[in-house]
Image (tube, rainbow, N blue to C red; front, side):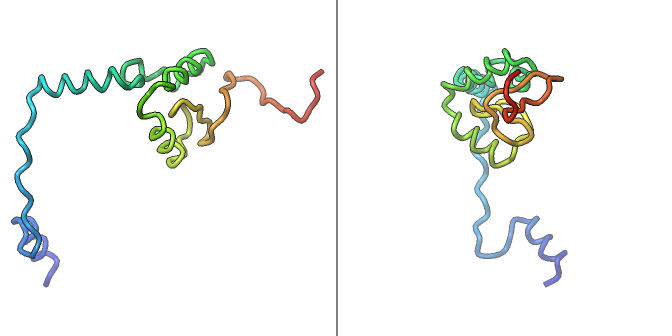
Length: 121
């Protein structure tokens, strides 16, 4: 069978042993969608607060984002997804990512790297 014939058959609803998918359920009303969105926003802090907070440069704001994640019901999945994707930066699942690696805390911009092998002066 030629590819174009197969594609034409698929576009017409299929002809094989697979059942034709049923029509999708009736769409929800806008008020139901808004109510659901508000419910999700009230349960998930990253939807309720400004999204820039999770990608902030200031240590104080990063620590606030981390603290907001502590009670999130999606925290474990969020962190697992971020680790799997090697997120380049931001707060994910209550942890700080820098260059795809979880770090204990974010250091301010422009500061030298902390070298723990040297004794303090």
